[in-house]
Length: 254
Length: 254
DNA sequence: CCAGTCTGTTCACTATAATTGAACGCGGAT
DNA sequence: ATCCGCGTTCAATTATAGTGAACAGACTGG
Image (cartoon, rainbow over all chains, first blue to last red; front, side):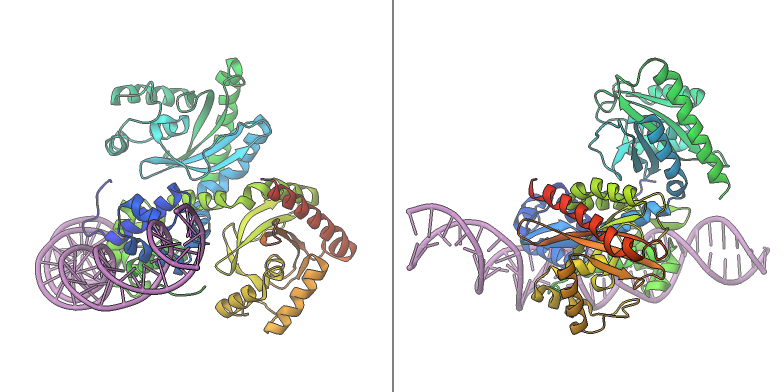
């Protein structure tokens, strides 16, 4: 897994360092980037002008910015995920029927990537946008995915990314994680009780293919005041499971 | 504009050639890519392993595929466009009120990029997804943008990209384009009569900022059988203009 | 109005790093 | 059991990425 290339093309690494910096700084000039990255101005300039020539970044009166061609690549990458096409309409339904925020997450490189996010009419405002990557063990979504992976896969992921993260109150050791995952397997759904975001609760269920491998997970999130009692413990889990089952059926027959 | 970098970083060009090929082939192995790009296997392998290490592509049992980190970059690029945030809710409304397909397009590098696409309940199925890039002169959206640019800007774009394209029946010369743009300026809206896609019509209006510069355009598209007569010539143009005006107001006060 | 200081940019040199073919090991097919 | 095709490794060569110094243009403030 986390193996490093043995003949890495350093320019590729630099290219994405530049793009990342451009994102972090929300657009920047040559000098600013040069300082931020501790790379000579002329070198940065070479990269920027090449990226602009390739139309992957754009220069708006002196400020270089990430271009929309990445939107095309990103939309393509999402479109290629069979789960997206199949689950989107169902997750839209989940959002409108509950009125809350509904999500699709898939695993990639040992982390979770939000594939899609549907907003119900009461949905909470949340900063994270589509494509955001999160540690798997810090969300209900991620925990359902881990729960249905083999021990070796989970080990590999923990080795690679550790168990740190914003607010991993409950899960700090491999044992605590395993206990939690066993729990999730038994219940079929995972809960998130303000672990990652203050005041936000979440109910998630996995989506399995015909070989019982996880191909992703779906969830509903909402404020603690609407996510409590029977609705949180019974009603929503049942709803999420039902939607996940529908998706699983559509996945097998396609 | 279309100037080429004078110290281009060739590896950057190669990097995106590889990514592009990965997209065109919809995932590929080392050998296949090597043949497709006419680059030695070992070189391709160096790029692929580096890109995988950087987590921008993913290797699913021997097949390399474009990764979801581009979704993050793409979503970021879109989010950075002020027009997106402001126009999205209005375009959603346009879609649901007309029942058709509503779009947002912005110019970048002399071409049009679809920023967003909202589907009404009768919306036609169209293959092009968000992020797709099109020649400006081949769509109603693009024509409204060109119509509100300076002659120098239009010249630069025509010089760079020419007037070719899938079905530029009507516009083949700079003069025909100018005539069409004058028309668009006078009417305020642009029409698209199956020029780009068989059986598809479109009505578009520009979005201007307080300095009267175009920052993008919005439209509704639909099948010829629903886009005819008064609805096509009066009703829809009025509707699109109204929505564009609302967006313009929100743009100036933000 | 001009000096001073920021930009972004150009250019030519040098050492580094990308590129390469040949060779290896593995798995599936014949 | 053999062979072909795959991905992968490695070390050599030379192309090329990286670099600092110098230039030009735009602002700023004296």
